[in-house]
Structure formats: C-alpha cells, structure tokens
Image 1 (cartoon, rainbow, N blue to C red):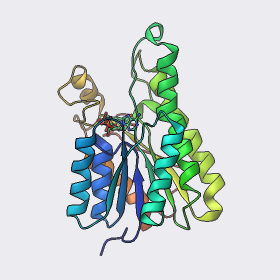
Image 2: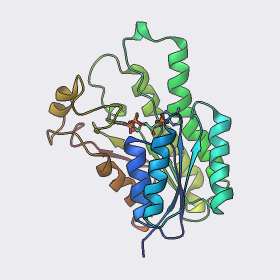
Image 3: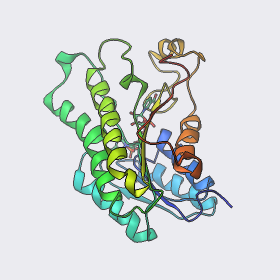
Length: 246
Ligand code: NDP
C-alpha cells in the first residue's frame, strides 16, 4: 500500500513536464489525481492513462490558469468527482522572459495571472475541501532566489510572490493541520527549458552538479512534502536546484 492511498491530488499544468512527473509520482504513492491543462489535450490524456495504469483514478480538466473562474471550477470538479481533496500542487506556469522594454502590459498581466493569482485562487478553492493533513505545494523557481542576469525581472517577480503567499498560507492554515510550501527547481529538462536549448550550457554551468534535473527529481521532493513524512514542514522554500543557488 502507498502512503498516499485514499488521498486526492490536484496538479495544475499536469499534461507535460514537471507537472506530469508530479502527477505520476503522486499516483505511484497511491493518490488519485486530477490534472489541469491549457492546450495539450492529447498529452493530458496520456498522463490520465498512465495514472490509471498504476491503478488510480485520474481526470484531466481543461482550465487556463489565467482565468480565475476556470481554476476554481477545476478544483471544485476534483473535489466533487473524487469526493475529497487533500493535496494541491500549483505547478502551471509561464516563463515570459525578455528585456524590460519588450514587456507589454499584457505580458505582465499574463505572468501574474498564471503564476501568482491562479495559485492563490486554487488555494482558496482547495482549502474549502481540505481536512487535517492537507497539503499546498507551489512550484517556484531558483530564479526567485537569485537572478542570473538581465531579462528575468517579470518571471522572478512572479516566482518570488509564491514565497510570501506560502508563508501567509502556512500561518493561516496551520491550526487546521494544513501545510504550505514552495519548491524552487533549478534547470529542469522540459519543453519550457530543454537541456539542448540555447542557453542550456550556461544554466548547466551554473549548477554545482553540472547538469539539468529530470522532472522526476522535482516530483520526488513534491511527493515527500505531500506525504506523511512532510508533516512538520510548512512555510518553507525548498531548493531542488542542483546547487544553482549554492
Ligand atoms: P512546460 O512548459 O514544459 O509545461 C507546462 C505545463 O503547464 C503544461 O502541462 C501546460 O499545459 C501547463 N500550462 C501552461 N500554462 C498553463 C495555463 N495557463 N493553464 C493551465 N495549464 C498551463 O513547463 P515546466 O514543466 O518546465 O514547468 C512547470 C513549472 O515549473 C512552471 O511553473 C515553471 O515556471 C517551473 N519551473 C521550471 C523550470 C525548468 O527549468 N523547466 C525551472 C524552474 C521552475 P498545456 O500543454 O496544455 O499548455
């Protein structure tokens, strides 16, 4: 039996990359999993099939994290379909990079809507359903700890916001036994940041380990925080960055 048997998790942006790895890892530990996605219906279906192949229930809900109503409805759907809600993983994110002068107001609004507002709205909806031992885990970025150069002000702003939100959630929800934490990945090989993309060598060189992470290496820490062994960790920011901020 798995340590998350009987638990229900929502993972935003679970169709690809880090979110897909998190969904699979939580299912391997016994959780039923609801993922959200924006465009990739086929990829979302593949993740659902992979979770079901592990003997767990799964559901994919199309919900643009830029739309707060869609985010809240997706969380409500998860609780209604699977009868409870224990774990929220705020993973969906956009990496809008570029020099200050290139950022339109629409870019700023989009980054803040998807990376900041959606996690807070999802936490609001999820905590209506969570009982004792609820878990809120948000995926930040090592860029929220140290900025490597120009072009990341907006992205860093959006990821740093999760740290403040998480501390506030930890204080607000502690008396219900609910924990809230942020995981800060370093470079992870995904569509957003491929290990063979331009600038990849520079990112690799910035780590102590000299390599990118696999998505599963981020998922492992999320699963630890989601499980019983994570019970006394709250309000924390945990770097899983290969030493990028060391
Ligand atoms: P990918 O771009 O590879 O995958 C993003 C996932 O999120 C997809 O499933 C995508 O769904 C979904 N998604 C994107 N936008 C939305 C949206 N508006 N609404 C709903 N779902 C959405 O990203 P990664 O896996 O690399 O990144 C995941 C998280 O990790 C992000 O928050 C990112 O900022 C963070 N991160 C990533 C790092 C890296 O090096 N890769 C490093 C540090 C942090 P769909 O396919 O349907 O669009």
